Image (cartoon, rainbow, N blue to C red; front, side, top):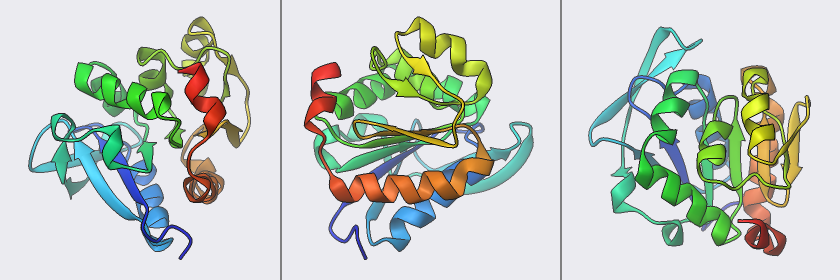
Length: 189
Protein backbone atom coordinates (compact mmCIF):
# COMPACT_ATOMS: atom_id res chain seq x y z
CA UNK A 1 0.00 0.00 0.00
CA UNK A 2 2.09 2.86 -1.32
CA UNK A 3 -0.37 5.64 -0.43
CA UNK A 4 -1.22 4.68 3.14
CA UNK A 5 -1.79 7.85 5.13
CA UNK A 6 -2.27 10.02 2.04
CA UNK A 7 -5.47 12.01 1.59
CA UNK A 8 -6.62 12.59 -1.97
CA UNK A 9 -9.52 14.73 -3.20
CA UNK A 10 -11.41 13.86 -6.38
CA UNK A 11 -13.80 16.33 -7.97
CA UNK A 12 -17.23 15.44 -9.31
CA UNK A 13 -19.82 17.58 -11.07
CA UNK A 14 -23.54 16.81 -10.94
CA UNK A 15 -24.85 15.23 -14.13
CA UNK A 16 -21.67 15.57 -16.10
CA UNK A 17 -18.48 13.89 -14.87
CA UNK A 18 -17.38 10.98 -17.06
CA UNK A 19 -17.92 7.84 -14.96
CA UNK A 20 -14.83 5.79 -15.90
CA UNK A 21 -12.60 8.87 -15.52
CA UNK A 22 -13.99 9.32 -12.00
CA UNK A 23 -14.34 5.72 -10.82
CA UNK A 24 -11.13 4.14 -12.12
CA UNK A 25 -8.73 6.75 -10.66
CA UNK A 26 -10.70 6.74 -7.39
CA UNK A 27 -10.49 2.93 -7.20
CA UNK A 28 -6.76 2.94 -8.09
CA UNK A 29 -5.86 5.50 -5.44
CA UNK A 30 -7.96 3.71 -2.80
CA UNK A 31 -6.43 0.34 -3.76
CA UNK A 32 -3.00 1.91 -3.17
CA UNK A 33 -4.09 2.78 0.38
CA UNK A 34 -5.11 6.45 0.17
CA UNK A 35 -8.18 7.95 1.78
CA UNK A 36 -10.27 9.54 -0.97
CA UNK A 37 -12.72 12.38 -0.43
CA UNK A 38 -15.29 13.01 -3.16
CA UNK A 39 -15.64 16.78 -3.51
CA UNK A 40 -18.66 18.11 -5.38
CA UNK A 41 -20.60 21.25 -6.12
CA UNK A 42 -23.68 20.09 -4.21
CA UNK A 43 -24.40 17.89 -1.18
CA UNK A 44 -25.96 14.46 -1.71
CA UNK A 45 -25.20 12.33 -4.73
CA UNK A 46 -23.81 13.27 -8.12
CA UNK A 47 -24.81 11.38 -11.24
CA UNK A 48 -22.08 10.66 -13.75
CA UNK A 49 -22.27 10.22 -17.53
CA UNK A 50 -20.81 7.72 -19.96
CA UNK A 51 -19.57 9.04 -23.31
CA UNK A 52 -20.88 12.46 -22.21
CA UNK A 53 -24.50 11.62 -23.11
CA UNK A 54 -25.49 8.34 -21.51
CA UNK A 55 -26.54 8.29 -17.85
CA UNK A 56 -24.05 6.75 -15.46
CA UNK A 57 -24.07 5.79 -11.81
CA UNK A 58 -24.55 8.00 -8.78
CA UNK A 59 -21.77 8.65 -6.27
CA UNK A 60 -21.99 10.13 -2.80
CA UNK A 61 -20.44 13.56 -2.35
CA UNK A 62 -18.41 13.60 0.87
CA UNK A 63 -17.83 17.36 0.96
CA UNK A 64 -18.75 20.36 -1.16
CA UNK A 65 -15.99 22.55 -2.53
CA UNK A 66 -16.67 25.35 -0.05
CA UNK A 67 -16.04 22.94 2.87
CA UNK A 68 -12.49 21.97 1.91
CA UNK A 69 -9.12 23.49 1.14
CA UNK A 70 -5.94 22.23 -0.48
CA UNK A 71 -4.47 22.13 3.05
CA UNK A 72 -6.72 19.13 3.76
CA UNK A 73 -5.19 16.91 1.05
CA UNK A 74 -1.98 15.50 -0.40
CA UNK A 75 -3.23 15.46 -4.01
CA UNK A 76 -6.15 16.09 -6.34
CA UNK A 77 -7.82 14.22 -9.22
CA UNK A 78 -9.84 16.12 -11.82
CA UNK A 79 -11.85 13.75 -14.02
CA UNK A 80 -13.11 14.72 -17.44
CA UNK A 81 -16.39 14.66 -19.21
CA UNK A 82 -17.22 17.65 -21.36
CA UNK A 83 -20.29 18.64 -19.34
CA UNK A 84 -18.70 17.98 -15.93
CA UNK A 85 -15.47 19.85 -16.71
CA UNK A 86 -17.48 22.82 -17.95
CA UNK A 87 -19.57 22.90 -14.75
CA UNK A 88 -16.44 22.70 -12.58
CA UNK A 89 -14.62 25.49 -14.40
CA UNK A 90 -17.67 27.76 -14.06
CA UNK A 91 -17.54 27.49 -10.25
CA UNK A 92 -15.26 30.12 -8.66
CA UNK A 93 -14.67 28.12 -5.47
CA UNK A 94 -13.56 25.09 -7.50
CA UNK A 95 -11.19 27.21 -9.59
CA UNK A 96 -9.72 28.70 -6.40
CA UNK A 97 -9.29 25.24 -4.88
CA UNK A 98 -7.43 23.97 -7.95
CA UNK A 99 -5.19 27.05 -7.96
CA UNK A 100 -4.36 26.39 -4.29
CA UNK A 101 -3.15 22.86 -5.05
CA UNK A 102 -0.66 24.32 -7.53
CA UNK A 103 0.37 27.12 -5.20
CA UNK A 104 1.14 24.48 -2.54
CA UNK A 105 3.03 22.30 -5.07
CA UNK A 106 0.78 19.30 -4.52
CA UNK A 107 0.39 16.65 -7.25
CA UNK A 108 -2.68 16.86 -9.47
CA UNK A 109 -4.02 14.31 -11.98
CA UNK A 110 -6.25 15.55 -14.80
CA UNK A 111 -7.81 13.67 -17.71
CA UNK A 112 -9.76 14.37 -20.91
CA UNK A 113 -11.64 17.73 -20.70
CA UNK A 114 -10.44 18.30 -17.12
CA UNK A 115 -7.65 20.68 -18.24
CA UNK A 116 -10.36 23.29 -18.88
CA UNK A 117 -10.27 23.75 -15.11
CA UNK A 118 -6.50 24.28 -15.25
CA UNK A 119 -6.98 26.93 -17.94
CA UNK A 120 -9.52 28.69 -15.70
CA UNK A 121 -7.18 28.43 -12.67
CA UNK A 122 -4.37 30.01 -14.74
CA UNK A 123 -1.79 27.33 -13.92
CA UNK A 124 -0.72 26.12 -17.38
CA UNK A 125 1.79 28.76 -18.41
CA UNK A 126 5.05 26.99 -19.34
CA UNK A 127 3.68 23.49 -18.74
CA UNK A 128 3.52 20.54 -21.12
CA UNK A 129 0.22 18.67 -20.92
CA UNK A 130 -2.15 16.50 -22.88
CA UNK A 131 -5.95 16.37 -22.97
CA UNK A 132 -8.85 15.50 -25.18
CA UNK A 133 -7.81 16.95 -28.58
CA UNK A 134 -10.51 19.64 -28.67
CA UNK A 135 -9.03 21.29 -25.54
CA UNK A 136 -5.66 21.81 -27.29
CA UNK A 137 -6.23 25.40 -28.38
CA UNK A 138 -7.47 26.43 -24.91
CA UNK A 139 -4.31 24.97 -23.36
CA UNK A 140 -2.06 26.71 -25.88
CA UNK A 141 -3.89 30.02 -25.38
CA UNK A 142 -3.28 29.64 -21.63
CA UNK A 143 0.47 29.33 -22.22
CA UNK A 144 0.77 25.57 -22.11
CA UNK A 145 2.33 23.21 -24.62
CA UNK A 146 -0.04 20.47 -25.80
CA UNK A 147 1.25 17.03 -26.84
CA UNK A 148 -0.61 13.95 -28.07
CA UNK A 149 0.61 11.30 -25.62
CA UNK A 150 -1.05 8.69 -23.43
CA UNK A 151 0.20 10.28 -20.21
CA UNK A 152 2.31 13.36 -19.55
CA UNK A 153 3.96 14.35 -16.26
CA UNK A 154 5.14 17.92 -15.72
CA UNK A 155 6.36 18.76 -12.18
CA UNK A 156 3.67 16.77 -10.40
CA UNK A 157 0.91 17.46 -12.92
CA UNK A 158 -0.26 14.24 -14.59
CA UNK A 159 -2.48 14.54 -17.67
CA UNK A 160 -4.06 12.03 -20.07
CA UNK A 161 -6.29 12.26 -23.14
CA UNK A 162 -9.31 9.98 -22.71
CA UNK A 163 -10.70 6.82 -21.07
CA UNK A 164 -8.43 4.58 -23.18
CA UNK A 165 -5.48 6.12 -21.33
CA UNK A 166 -6.86 5.27 -17.87
CA UNK A 167 -4.47 2.36 -17.08
CA UNK A 168 -1.41 4.57 -17.66
CA UNK A 169 -3.06 7.58 -16.00
CA UNK A 170 -4.02 5.64 -12.86
CA UNK A 171 -0.55 4.11 -12.49
CA UNK A 172 1.11 7.51 -12.89
CA UNK A 173 -1.13 9.39 -10.43
CA UNK A 174 -0.45 6.75 -7.78
CA UNK A 175 3.28 7.21 -8.40
CA UNK A 176 3.06 11.02 -8.23
CA UNK A 177 0.84 10.98 -5.13
CA UNK A 178 3.41 8.72 -3.47
CA UNK A 179 6.21 11.17 -4.25
CA UNK A 180 4.26 14.10 -2.79
CA UNK A 181 5.22 17.75 -3.14
CA UNK A 182 7.02 19.07 -6.18
CA UNK A 183 8.97 22.23 -5.33
CA UNK A 184 9.20 23.40 -8.96
CA UNK A 185 5.43 23.23 -9.30
CA UNK A 186 4.91 26.01 -6.74
CA UNK A 187 6.95 28.50 -8.74
CA UNK A 188 4.75 28.23 -11.80
CA UNK A 189 1.38 28.69 -10.06
